[in-house]
Length: 288
Length: 318
Image (cartoon, rainbow over all chains, first blue to last red; front, side):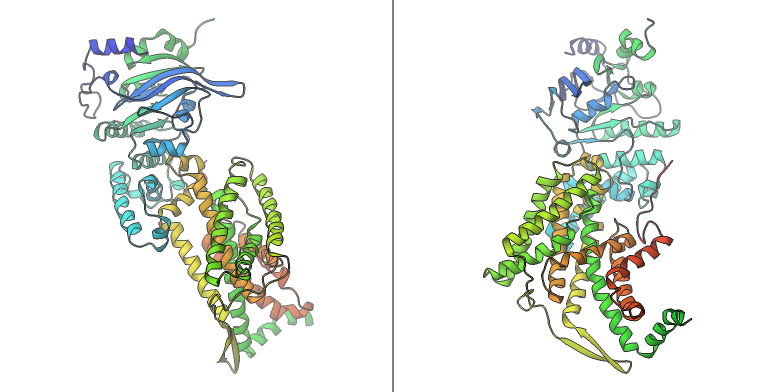
C-alpha cells in the first residue's frame, strides 16, 4: 500500500529534521517504518445518495504526526468521525491497535485511547476550564456512585489525584490564569487550547485534531504548533490532524494524506505531497 | 377606596396584630415550598441532562408512592417495600432510556416532550391496573416518620407545627443538598453537566449518554419517591396528586429550567407566596386562590427577569 513511500523514506534517512523554527526538533526515526497504530482499509461512507468517502485506505503509525488535508468538502472531518466512532463506515474497515471493530461507538473509542478535538470547538460552555479538563479524566476514574454520593473515602482520594494530573496539563498549556473561568467567556484561541487540554487529560494513544489552528492569529498558531510538537515528542502521543494552513502542515507532519471529493489522491511525506501533480491540481484547479 | 385598603392596608395590619398567625402561615408555606422545590428538582435534573421537559414527573411521584404502598399492602414489610419501590424506579429509568429516549435520540425536543406525555398516560394506566385507582393511605408510621404536632407559644398565641412537616423539610433539604454537591463536585455530576452542554463533546471524552440518562431518570425517580412519601403522608396517595406536580411549572419559570438553586428558591417563593396570598388576600375575592396564585407570582417575576431568577444567561460570542 505504501511501498513507494517506504522506499523513498528509507533511501534518505533522517536528513530533514534539524532545527526548523524555535522548537527543539529531535532527530525522528523514520515514520513510515514504524508499527501501525491505526489502519483504514477501503473505507467508504455514504449518507443516503451522497458519498462522503470512497474507498479510502491509509495508516497511522505509532508516534508520528499524520496530517489529513484536502479542499473543503473533501471528507476530512468525516474521516475523523469514522475513526472515533461518530460515523460507521458503510464499507471497509478500521483497525486500531490490531483490533477491528465493525461498529465502534464513540465512548468505546475513547476508552480505547482515541481523543479528539472539534472543528468548531465543542466545550462544556457553562463549566470552568478546570471542570472541562477534568471531564477528560472521566474514564480513568473508578469510584462508584455510592462513594461519590457520600463524597468520602475512595471518591475524594481519586478526585485529588486526578486534579493533580489536570493541574499539570493546565501548566503545560500555560493557562493557569483561566483555571476558574467559565469557558464560554474565553476568547476563541484559548477555547481551542482548553479543548486540547481536555483531550490530553485522557492520556490518549491517538489524538485527533480537527483544524486545531482554524481562526487563529499567527502568534496563536505558533503556540499551538509548539504544543502539538511537544505533545508528540514528550508524551509520544500519535497525532492525526486536519489543517488548512499548508505551511503548518508541512512543518509539523511526518506524513500527509490528501483527500479530494472523498477519495485519496496522494499519500506521503510533505515534500512528496507538495510535488504531486494531483494535489497541485486539487488545490489550484485544472484548466478545462 | 375600600378595596385599596383591603389590598394594601388590612392584610399588613393583620400580620402585625397577630404575629402567631403570620408565623404559622409562613411555616406552612415553607413546607409546601420545600416540597414544590423537590418536584421542580426532578424536572431540572432531567432537563439539564437530556434537554427533555419530562411531563411525566408528576405521575412519577404518584406512581412511586403507589408502588411503595402497593407492595406494603401485598404483605412486604415497610423497609422491604421501600427498597422494592427504589428498584422499580430504577427499572423505570432503564426502560425509559431503552424504549423512549434511545430510539428518539436527535429528534426535536417537542417529540421527546410528546413522548413523555405518552409515558404519563402509560404510567396512569399501568398504575391503576396493578394497584387500583382508589386513594390509599401512606404508610407513615411503618416508615417511622413522626406524626403528631407540637404547639409553640408565640406572640400571644400558639403556632402549631406538625412533626411530619419538620421531617419533610429536613429530608427534602438533605436531599437537595446532596444532589447539589453531587452535581458540582463529582465525576458523574460533571458528566451530567457535560452531557447537558454538548453531546458530541461528552461522547468524545468517553461519557456514555445512555448511562447518564439512566442515572438522571433514576435520580428523578428517587426524588419522585421521596416527594410522593411526603405528600402522600400529608394527604393521601391518589392520582389527584399529579395536579400538585403542575405547581412545579411556575417554580421552574421562576427558577429557570436548568438551575438547582433556582428550583429551591423558586419553590420557597411559590410555596410561601401562595399561602400568604390565600390567607391574607384570598378572602377579598372569596378564597380559593391557592390553585392559581402561584402562576400570578411567576408572571410578575417574569416581567422583571425573563430568564428566571437563576436561569443561565445565554452567553454567546458573536
